[in-house]
Every structure is written in C-alpha cells, then in structure tokens.
Image (tube, rainbow, N blue to C red):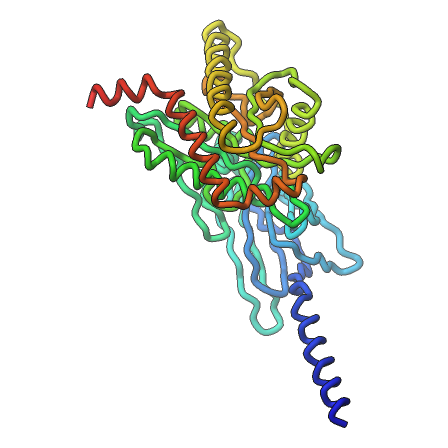
Length: 405
C-alpha cells in the first residue's frame, strides 16, 4: 500500500511538472469587422482577452499593419474578411513564431485618429478598435516615415525614443550603432536558441557604453529595445542625426560549412559581392523587410549629380579605411574568418554620404561562435578593439577638438 501511495504521488507531481512545461494557451481572435464610410472607418477585432498590440503604416501601396502576439484566429466557418470605407480589403495570419499580423489594404491615405482596447465585460469580448480618417498622401507618408525613423509613439502604450535633430549636435563625432533585426524579425537563431537580435543589441549597448567612457563622441543606437525598424529606416536615422560613422552589428548563420565557418568579418558596400558568402549574407539580410511585411517598393535613387557622386566615393573610401582599421584591431581580440574584409550590396549600408560598415560578430550556426557571442569577456575584448579602431579613425578630429578646448 505504501508503494502504491508513493507511486501515485510521483505520478501526480510528474503530471503537474509536464503541464507546467506546456506553452501558455494563445489568445483567440473570434471576430473582426469594418464599419464606416470613405471619410471615417472603424476596424474592430474581438478577442477573448487583452493583449499587447502595435500599429504602424506603410506607404505605396498604403497599408496599416497591426502586430499582435501569436494568436489563434478562431473565426466562424462562414466568416469572410471584407473591406469597407477606407479599407479596401484585409488579411491576417502568423508571420513568425510568437507573432501574428493583420494587414489593412487601404483605398487611399488615412490618419489614425485613435486606437484603444475595450476590456471584455459580461458576455462582451475584449475589443481592439482602430479609427481611421481620410487624409492626404503627404500626411500619410509622414506617418509612415515617422514610424520608420522611430519617431512615432507605439500604440501599445510604450513610447519610442525621439530622434535628436541636427541642432542638438556638438562638435564631437556622431556615431550611430545599428543592432540588426529586432521585434518581429529575430534574425539568425543558434542551435541552442540564441537569437541574433538579442546578441547584437546586447553588444551594441556594451559598445555604446565603452565609447561614451571615452568622452569624445556622441553615440546613438538605432534601437535600444526589441523593436523592428525597416532597413531604410535605419539609414534614415543615421542621416537625420548627421552621423559621421554608421556601424551595423550582426551575427548571422549559414547552412553549408556551419561546423567549420566561424569568426568575425567586416563588410563595406559594393554592388558586386566580393565572394559567394558575402553575396549570400547580403541577400539574407536584405530580406529582413520582406519577412517582416514591410514595403519593398523601389527606393528612389539619389540625385545623380556630380556632387552626390563625389560624396558617394568619399564615403566609400572612408568606409574601407575604417574597415581596415577595425580588422587590424580585431585580430588580437577575436577569431576572424579568412579574408575578413569583404563587400556586398547590403541595403543598410546604402547611405551615399556616411561612412558605413556592417560587422558580423560571428556565426550562430557554429556552436563555438554561439557560445563565444554570449561571453562578457569576449564582448569586453571586441568592444575595446572597436573603440581603438574608432579612436584611430577620428584621431585628427579629436585632436583638433582638444586644441579648441
């Protein structure tokens, strides 16, 4: 009897532990509808509980994006997603593990008048409500741009940082550090579950702190939390801040040769990739917007005059100069891949007037690199090496500022 009692207790505990390991039940979206006319339109989502949400805008074609945690779309069998008023049509689904999305295709430009959650009471579900009003294209595109630049408040209740204007600059060199991916776009994932977006944000914050200790620079991050920013938006942030150097930080993965390919590398912009690996990485990074449901229409070319062409050449030369300095410093700080100075057509490097590089810290597809990238000691060594490269790059300007002081 004692044995049976102990066995029953064990099975009860084991069953409880197994239940605890099961993922939490997803929220259910049970209905959605559009009401209103071509002047004011309301979009309503009915859910079984309150959840976080985020609203953003994409121009050309005009769309409203509603990001949700991963939910179960539990619509009635006869349900149809029909448009009305300012909403021509809409669609829904899961876009990533842990993330669902609703996309509203618009008949024309709109402004978001307000968005809010109504808590469920009695037999009424929780409701997410968006009120859209007719607008002109210029104001709609301003919304879209502000979202891309991180200037627009998030409608989940969390405020984005405001981008500082050029008027707030000092004479110190301005450096913009860009932690790749973020939000709905996790980037590469290691065998042990390490997320690229997490690794690069942690490193970028570490590097920012090290540079600020130098006292010679003004440092900005394109994102300081788990937030998605389109590739063009990252470039625009650097342009708005009149950056003197743009550093995009990544930690990618590969399929072929994953067990043997490891180490850091630095990329500069080139329409012609330096090798197959560079081309493959650039193609994968440039798909970030596509995977996150962002507008992929052709970006307008810069004005094709001789001044722009000269600025582009100068920025490219400075980019290569900094990349060479960084490689020299990194040699003693971390393992580098063969031929660590490479080039490819990374979208995030396409600023014609700002020296820009993309640093691959390592490969999450390699178990040794994945372990290394999570090490505080490694972060300290690599960030110190990059600080030394940055000091060398801005040596003349820093000396001039010291003399003026």
